[in-house]
Image (cartoon, rainbow, N blue to C red; front, side, top):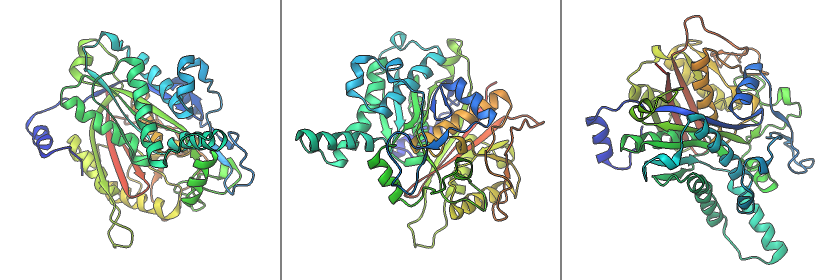
Length: 422
């Protein structure tokens, strides 16, 4: 169900009508394109950014493919004074935030104090930071920092760097729900706007392409060991063998609709509904609750399944998880009842950045009236009855509403409904 900080928040949301907040800016860092324009053009070409790991020597690991951002030059995006204080993930997030704010045409210095904040998601980037701390400990005798302290401090710094750099002194925070985090962050930003905040930078950017992070992902047992980039990440396919890990994500400028209209902002679309659920404990016999999250998000938006024109799937790339998602979609829309796509097949799963990037793709799909493809997957498996979009598609009836789904390790499910502007 949709989560609230207090029962008073729930009551206020029910009692007061709210215009859906609007997205006025998008910033992207992705393996198949740095910057929104480059990434979106690559996605519509079906261009993949998945290839052999180059960030470290992966020859001895069973999984050796990743979605790396190979053309990112930190000095071009981050002031030199910040380079010693940041790691790769934070630099990617700073670049995405810069682009999103510029795209929105927002000058944070011109906003009232506390009118704008930052709510982001992260889940894996702390591995790189933690590895750096451990290397310093081993090589220089540095002070010991626990993994928990390291990660908690890192996540706070990641959001804090964006806030400080742009003078965003309003409500800020970080959510950690793995792949679902990008949607959960947007849902929290939406609540803040309902409480009177004018603007939030929100979404997720993640990266754990380092030996420590790689070892943790391998231990999770979900990475594919396929060596061919074109046969590695195949969600909904009978040949699915796991996913490819990637890095990057998207940050959005989410803005109060009236404030955006008053300044004449260009609008990509509205975030009309959000919801989150949690799966029952393993072995309890309870059913997965991804469908519940989708239904609740549609109800939150005041819509029905018949209103949905396209679904951006979580697309785990594991047979059991793919079947579960396909069953949820068939239960909502009927077998093959709505176009389903997974452009993350071009980037890999980006942890907290994945759902945020899908949200950006959904908004651009509504703007351009086009559905990006799921690459490398032919016909879906017989037990995954979905209308999988494997070539760029322009539906004759038009696109007005998109549903974005995400699942995170540990049982997190999230859903968001976005609608076209105007």
